Image: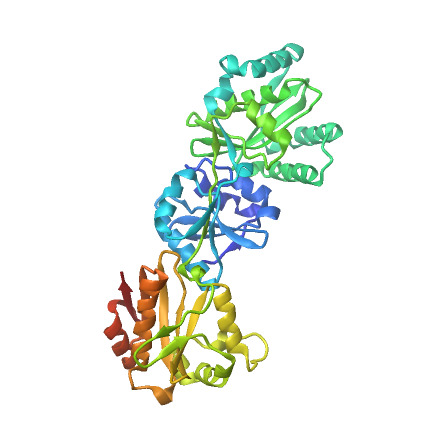
Length: 468
């Protein structure tokens, strides 16, 4: 299973090896966003199948970025690892800030999902040549501002900034705060984060520059090259210098393109719903608004609003009731049966084992759409259970069945298992049902072989599946 580490500034170089050749063009696929906004995104990361897997936690809900491949990364394998993690931990599968060009692949991959693509979080994408030249009548406003700045401050110079320029940068922050017009807590917090990111200039992840007038910084920018996109993380200037913002944008893009001629796009990030930022970013005439679709993936178990009931020739399969407590507890506490079941309740038990513990788990799993447990009834008596669980988000789920020892050997398990598999495929709408048994468990092997097709094996299990 995936193992995640919190994103910290010291991880910048490790993340950078994935982002530096990225093709997604969105600002979230950059070192700067993950580090600068880590208090809001709570990002953690793992590496698998040659890919970077980034997991964020927003409003208490885990959300995954689309996997970022390294040189020989397998994105589909990384997606499978994410799906398995969500299944094994009982978390909803959510893929957010999905690059627009990858959305069709996910639509084909997942049979059921909810989709959102909010305007607030769309990135402003500009052609680099447009910001370098500001050519054409539609950019006359920017050119006028730049000309006014150059006329009023002919001594202005562009300088490349590095960690050795810390005194110059520190003085700028002092000057900037003296002119700072926004009093909101969010704006003040953003300024603190900008300072922290500039402190990482020696990491080699970023490029930075500024405009000086008489040796004093009046504007600065910090960006990150991700493939053919320059992601602008920070753009700050002294308001008292009229025209300095468009002059800084043009100078920074021009100088950066000279150093990195592969740049074709400039991403000035989203506006977070701020009216002033939106107005400003639109004035620079973006070529595109970078969409960030969010896929909240569902399983077929989400369709179930109430416990289903199934009847066979001899059995009834329905929900576990209060009066089943004694029989069900005996089934769950049977260590011999648990050995072949492949799960020991002690693994997840927290605190004291209460009389209603097992029934409570069944109800919680059903409410969370993690599993549906069927009581296997013979003449109304609970003699076992069949459980459909571990949905794989792609139309599959696993099925298990166990029968109390005093009722074993009569074919009840086979009858119940086959009935639930048929219901899952033809009523619930699954594409496939899978199962497994220990290699030493001859009875289970015989039962599964009569209902399903063997699909593989490893050192421990035989695997089976049934498809439609």
